[in-house]
Structures are given as C-alpha cells and as structure tokens.
Image (cartoon, rainbow, N blue to C red; front, top):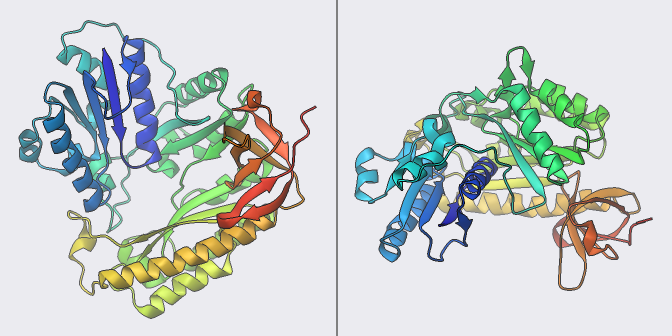
Length: 419
C-alpha cells in the first residue's frame, strides 16, 4: 500500500511526521509524493494563525474532491482548534486527537482492517539533520497564542528514551541532531531538566553535533548558554521568541520577562561566546503597539548582534485574548513595520556573516548543486557554499574557510582540507 504526507507548520510537526513515516514503512507501506494517488493520505495540520488553519481546511476539501477513495487522516492542531461539527462536515476518514498521536499508525491499520504488531522504527528526514522530539505542550498562555489549547499541558519524554532515540539517529548516520519541543524550557524527567538532557546528548558516542530548537525567554536560557559555551558539540546558536522590544507590549502579550532581562541575558551569553548566533521571533503591530513602542523594538534589535530574525505582522487568532484587545494597529501598518525589521534583519545577518571571513568554520554538508558546490550550515546557523567537496562527504561535518559573502549572509568558502 502507499501513503502520502502533507505537513504544515513547525519543526515539531515535521519531527512527528518523520515518526509516522517510519511507522508506515515498518508496516510495509511505500511513501509516495503528496499529490500523487495514495491509499492513505496523512495531513499534519497547523492552527497557529487563522490563515494557517484556513489553508489546512481548504486543502482537506480540495483533496476530498480529488481523491474520494483515499483514506484521509487528519492530525495536528486543527483537530483541537475547530469544532467537531466542522470535522464531521469535512468527510475525513480518521481524525486523530493529540492524546492518540503516538498511536496514529496503529489506528490507521485498524481502520483499514490490517493486523500488525508494533515495530521499532528509526525516523527518516528530508535533510541531513534529525529532529529529536523531547517535549510537547505548553501552559504559558500568552495572550496571542492558541498553542496551549491545541497542544495541551507540558509533557516530557523519559530521559533514557530521548537518549536511545538520539543514539539511533547517530547510528543511522545523521550528522546533526536538533532537539525540539513545543516549549523546551519545560522539559523535566524527575529532577533532570533540559540542561541535564543536553549535556547527556552531547556526550553520545559518535555524535557529530547537537542543535537546540527555539527556547522560551525568561526560563533556562542562561544555564543553557553556560553549557553551550563549554560544550564543543552543542551548536553556538540560540533562538528566542522575544516577540517585542517594548515592555508595555510584552506585558499585554503575557510574556514573562522584560527588555532589560533579555538584554542582560544576551550580553552575558555574548561575553561567553562573542560569535554566538542569535535568532529571535518578533511580532509587529500587536494591539496597542504605538510608533514609540515599535521604535523601542527596532532600537533593541539594533543594539544587539542578531543574526537571524523571524518577523511576523500580528494576526488575530480567534480563541485567544489578544483577538479581542482594543487599539488594533491597521493591517498595512503592521506589514510596514515588519518590512522595516526585515530590512534590518538582512543587514545584520550580512554583518554577522562577514565576521567569519578568514576563520575556520564547521559545516554540515546537506546537498550539492548542479555546479558541484556543497551546501550546508555552520553551527552558528549561517548558510554556506563550499567548492571542492567530494560527493561522498554528504552528511559529514567539514571544516572550511569563508572568503566572501553573498546576499542574505550566505558564506562562500574555500576548498577545505580533506586529508
């Protein structure tokens, strides 16, 4: 039998889809590209914004018309965000709620009348990096976010299970493992927290390198960067969903830190690691964000060496408190402010990348282009193109020396020493 997947949204969704794919493979299914005929089609949905939810619902309706005989399986945040009546009207064959997600493959097999014993599987990924899901759920309830309602309360995988799966990724030849979760800072197994887990993962035999997913500010980031500074295999990149550089906006968002807190934390981290890659999510045009408040955000970003910014114009998400807030910023103004921060992002990323010219950097080789250039990412999360790398070095970490940058901070590197 054949199975196809369509995954929307975050890295956590992609990590879960890799688990589904491995489970179907172990049960004898062949994966086919989405859009081609398949006996089973799994839609892994996202509802972080109303637009994302609408996109998923539109695709479900289209797919049902085009492939009336396929077994259509729905999983992900849309399952929790929309009404049961809406789901019934979509003519979905199998709806898998979040508490049954780990049993998705078994549920599909049962629906199809197939008997199969559970098998141990190793997920596959479309890149040379493997995503290790260690945690799910969030109970921070920020005023703009639907995730606590769709993902549920925090839940952590057992410490030893995380290590076993990570070792299976190493043994399968992945050069980098990305630790991911809904709210990583909430990871806890007994007395052991995220820092303990990262330390243990970094010590796995044969590990290439370890990368940390997005980490909530105002939690354990100081302890994490202290470990990062002394752990060579832990990538020197920290991504924080800071969202605003104005304290008034942060308060309305329900965030758990101030701009001053963030500034002190980041300066402390940069003292330990002067070339630390810094990433941030930022929202522009949140209700009540004045021009002065936006200028505070712009000044905050200017003052620190951010190398990667994800900028989003605020989008009302029904079901969240912020969707009812007064003092809405006009949509065009939200987009204008976002465009200004995106221009700032491009400039700062290029400046950060130029700081690595003439130094030795380590790049995970992910693919080769038609001209034979190897493409990959540094530990600081800079894209890099390298000449002279043999095709056999895909998935391997290669040391090279950047000599120039392209637009958007892409590094061009000299032929590495492959002796």
